[in-house]
Image (tube, rainbow, N blue to C red; front, side):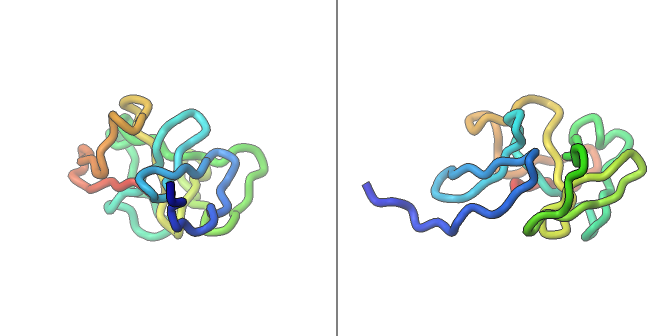
Length: 117
């Protein structure tokens, strides 16, 4: 069986793991949730609050975490959130996003599009 031609796994914060799925690198949190970004966010700024937070939980920094590789920090009113390539990242609060249960895109209450990282 041929080995997929993938780039080396990128550095990630301790809250996030890198997996290979369909010959692509994808991110998942240590508790099994897939990592998403929202088109409603501006670079370095999260637009998710209020009702959005009922469905999409920011991935918050733990302890003394610091930026690493393409992972930076967004400051929110309620804490510090990870961002990948400047885009704040989230997990779905609806269920653990096992591969069979997730789709490439979701529509939120705000009608913004969310995409897997």
